[in-house]
Image 1 (cartoon, rainbow, N blue to C red):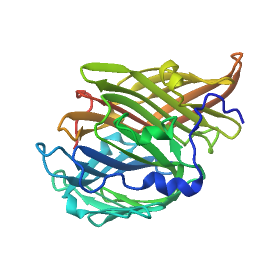
Image 2: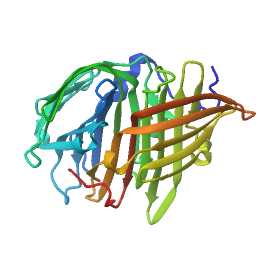
Image 3: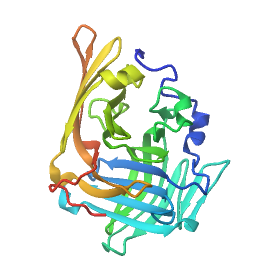
Length: 349
């Protein structure tokens, strides 16, 4: 299996270490810290998708008190006007977690290594979402950074680990009164934490490819701020199919991978010693749901998110001969985050 271009850590650790990737990093006291667990999945039968977040924010003392939250977004590819977002905030004493075994609780909601359940009744919007789902994945844990040491240093300020990169979800989702039974719905479960969000970013994930139901794609393009200076864009891409692997997370690849995005459209290119990938993700504006994030220092940023974008990936060998093309209509996650809002995407929460 071609795997050139991966950093020494590569992207994986043993399956037994998935739980270590999910353990809570907050110590229960530190200020200026945030932590997020998110799950997303697509039900291809009903052409719907959902995004669920279990979060905590411990802002600087001058900003406010620590809190934990549940977030939910529902997407309907058939009728995007049915898309909606809900959120519920709680004081931090409603947060519970395990230190030896992974378990996170926000009020009555629970997230464990292979199970999640919860309910959001949003008093502001009147919307609701509930879920009771089992999930698992054949893939080992995926690390964005090429060296494990980077997960213990102050920089980068946001750390990303994906315990379930190519997950399948089964169970029940109720969104806005619509009950959906999931069976092996493709998705992902990711854990991130840090002291400040990136300045801006594009992110994508897909494991609903028409040509190869085992394939999984993950990509990110992030810009950070160092004092008054905006950094270059750091770009990471990964693709695994039945017969090949493209992993571009080495530091040089973060700078030489190509990426350009705007609202509704992202194009990129990445390569290793043996294969080259050219990709495009696109979505109509009405498929996006806008939500507001907040840094622990009180600064706001806005997320434009859809789980029903379309993706096209073309894979070539080192001589430029086409090898594979992968496509997914309405089955790709696309998130574009910036320090400004876009009038085309109303902010729902």
